[in-house]
Image (cartoon, rainbow, N blue to C red):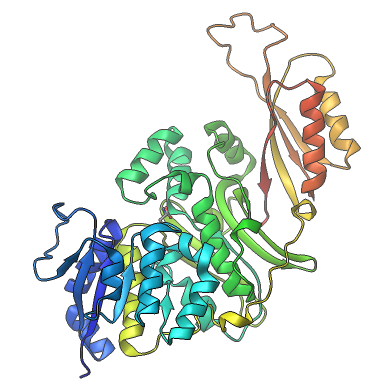
Length: 441
Ligand code: HSE
């Protein structure tokens, strides 16, 4: 048996503690599978006193993750600190420069600096591994990079944030408020340290940027992504979607078009019968549409300590076996294709539009006219009666706005934005129109 593989692990949050538990629980089987023992030599974390339920008495403690990254006592640096800059970036760079392999779950860091770090790893002759950075426990990185190496990918999309899917599912099933569901996701350890990253769609965008690059061989470009989060989704939207035969999911979608790459993150209404609509709770799903294999979909837990630890340890095992790839993105960093962005105005989809319309003659007709002027065809219009508010007992009050829902046939994003802008300016609505794209996935 070869000599042991020595790890230094920085960041002892939910995932870090789970990685150590997994390594302890499966030490024997991992040693057999990898042909050598894997040993934890050092850890770096801010708070040494916190009880994490794991025995760390035999490992060296480092205050500074950079010092751990450079330690001659380790072969692999496992970065679980998080964040696109600061100690995470500094320690990953230090580890690569010191000739250590790196395993990271840090999508924000790679979405910003991935190609540059890949080039650095190649130059130093070490590997940079990131299975846990996208979709928690789902092995989508290896699937795209290795299992689908013989395919040209046309589209990749999915539910990439466990927190958002958990929130939307509980709101739909239990009619709970957004805030209650978010708090529960935080308590379960699904959410990022700053949950704005989850609910604002940025976590999904970071993951999508990595998938896009792996799928199309293009440079990583998170700034090219159109991002809408789930904070504007109300229980009324979820109930209306349900009545119309849809569910609302936060999707990340990347597609190659004739005019460039389209990357977007937004709440999406998907038919209840579609595979993606049935992915509930903290589960993630990633669908890949490729030329030779056709369509495949991987489903699994997208967040949580144990699921993410499973992916981290799969990367560590690759290094231990000597099977980790030197080209992190599946091709040399110098051969990534320059990113060509598609104009989002060209996007075609159906739309669900929620308006708050003043109850006066001609208001609906004026709205329908604005849609028609932009060539948008309406599939249905539903006027929902709003229960009278305690402070507005006179229900015949014509200034009391009523919720109106429009469903459109497929149209362009540019036409929709123009029509909604005009409708808002016409003054028949009391607030900016709210829309959700409809995809027939
Ligand atoms: N906060 C993330 C999620 C964790 O909810 O999916 C995994 O990246």
